[in-house]
Structure formats: C-alpha cells, structure tokens
Amino acid sequence: KLENATIKAELGRASWKLLHTMMARFPEQPTPDDRLALQTYIQLFARLYPCGDCAAHFQKLLAKYPPQTSSRNAAAGWACYVHNQVNKRLKKPEFDCNNIGDFYDCGCGDEKKNNGG
Ligand code: FAD
View 1 (cartoon, rainbow, N blue to C red):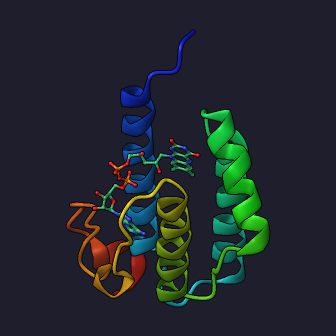
View 2 (cartoon, protein in one colour; view 1 turned 90 degrees about the horizontal axis):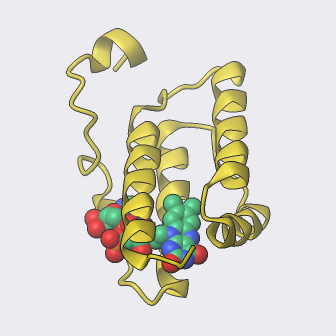
C-alpha cells in the first residue's frame, strides 16, 4: 500500500497524546514496580509502534536518551524531550516543556483515588 501521510500523522497525534497523558498520571513517587512497568511499556511501545520507520528512529532515540522513571516530573520531562527530538527531525516547532504541567489532562476526575495526589 502507498504511504498516507494524513493517516500516519493522525496515528502520531493519538500516540503522543496517550504517552504524554500517561506521564501526567504517573506516580510522583513511583515504586520500583511502577518504574519497571513504565520502562517496559516505553520499550515495547518503541518496538511495536505500527509505523516501522518511526519505530526504528524512536528506538535509536531511546538508546541515546533512556527513559526517566524516577518521578512523574522526570518521566513527563523525558517524554517532552524525546518528542521534541522527533519534532526537530520532522522540522516541527519545539514545544516548551515548562508548559507541560496542565497540558495533558486525562479527564478522569479521580486523581486522588488512583495516584495519591
Ligand atoms: P504532534 O507531533 O503529533 O504533536 C501533537 C501535539 O502535541 C502538538 O500539537 C502539541 O500540542 C503537542 N506537542 C508537540 N510537541 C510536544 C512535546 N515535545 N511534548 C509534549 N507535547 C508536545 N512521523 C513521521 O513522519 N516520521 C517519523 O519518523 C515519525 N516518528 C514518530 C515516532 C513516534 C514514537 C511517534 C509517536 C510519532 C512519530 N511520527 C513520525 C508522527 C509525528 O511525530 C507526528 O505525530 C505527526 O507528524 C503529527 O504531527 P503534529 O504536527 O500534528 O503534532
């Protein structure tokens, strides 16, 4: 099948949205098990991402910039940073990672119940 840039971009937006929203909900003080779960998720995400070219590039990025899982801030900052690396390669504007705080809201309305703050 031919490449379809519209569909590829839509998949990218959906994927980034999920990834950043997960980071915004990651525990502020993760347990070793939380940290392993995120680390594993990111590695498998990079391996199984449906656009093969994108996956190959992203795996190289992960090797260069290993996922940060020590806290919510570290994880969100890391994801913002690697997304900016992808933006750079695709000649897209850089996102200001200082503004990531309230940008990704899961709409769940149960922050306290699940993540202790
Ligand atoms: P996106 O980059 O999809 O971003 C969506 C929104 O997120 C933006 O509008 C902005 O509000 C916000 N945002 C932007 N930067 C950041 C940031 N640093 N941190 C947090 N939020 C931010 N496409 C290719 O053509 N080739 C590739 O090799 C490729 N590799 C990819 C690898 C991965 C892992 C993923 C998830 C996607 C990849 N894509 C690739 C898709 C590409 O990154 C974009 O998703 C797609 O081109 C749509 O771009 P967009 O301009 O709508 O914004």
